[in-house]
Image (cartoon, rainbow over all chains, first blue to last red; front, side, top):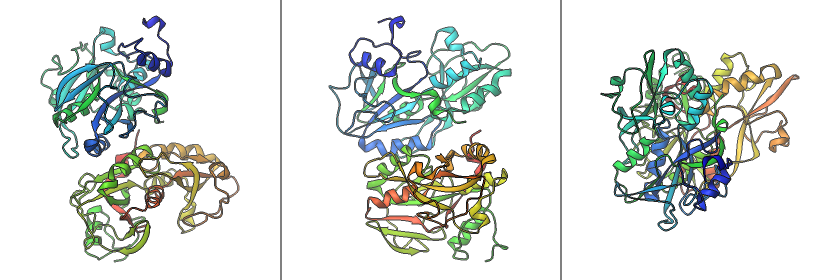
Length: 264
Length: 264
């Protein structure tokens, strides 16, 4: 299935993913609908991870938690199945990557709790709509991400530095970028830092820890947002016996619209 | 100690409460600082109650969770003690009220988890500042509260109807009331309903389920906000072996300012 023929309702996209007809990255798919980062953990870690998300809402904006014993995100995607409706999954054991798979049906356990977390696609759409260009999209690469010296607020065994994404913004558009993204606290919200990368512990802006480097043009400042890689990095630090995430770029697509999560 | 001599920093107020010098209701105390509803439950219920709050942020806006083994809300009130720094507590066993006490030191257990939830004082201040009068304050009585037919989103054994508070607002000020309270999602946020009480299952607006009745003047509509009584009512429905709350009107005062929680 090519992007030309890709149906655009979340239900249809999930159906095509589930049946194996389509397994691509989800950027630009079902435009206007909220996509989610996925983190799946055993129940014994669920309270502490939920509390970690509550204490760190900017990097960990919770959209839904699917309790152990259930595989359906019934609030944001009724009728869906968390085990089959994401185009790809990564499995980690004791903090180590062991496999990338198309389906979680073979490895599913009844004690697993699924966390759906907001991702930056929603606020990138809002910025693009506001006339603020996204450099990584212009360059056709992944956004630049960095490990900072900003500590998250720990919960139980979960602790570690915040990971941020960076987008260069023209100085005349920085205020607008703050305003536009502030409306979307469920998808990382307002920036955590503007300008000097060294102030948040980033030594070399041209060498991101994750993703690709992007050009910063004259007249632009780097603007930094809390990134959904944070909870994955923090959780893997704990070396949980089992952790499952979405594969990079292959998000879970919900039935909720970006606008459903906008404040004011 | 009279209100004239009442010191106004949260730290000093808590010190006077802890030492027994002062034990009054906290309305108007430490103005500008966020006050919290308190719900304390055994650890075995903590994940489900935390999830209930995550799923129902309007009635259950979480400010902080103090994990089992700790008695200090270190994020919102460092140096405080949740067992002694609230002017009064109510103890419930198996869903039944058993005692109102000044201190939790004698009955504290290491498996208790404390939940601090935003209360409506913050947004009432914001509305008053915006020139929207609060009828229950004019009348010197408690706000009117009602059990509605709006179901909360269940989590584990926690389920039940939403409780709302009602404030009459002049029709010309309703839009402003929505705008002003929308800025405070951490303290119940925007209204859940405007106008016709019957539409949310309230049969007789003159007979609130909790609090006192207030007058609705010609030209005013009743405006309804999600109420912090909801999580207490829902939790007591489950008849937990032990649940502790603040005594009515006697809140826990944090070091955070109302403005710290304002969005935009």
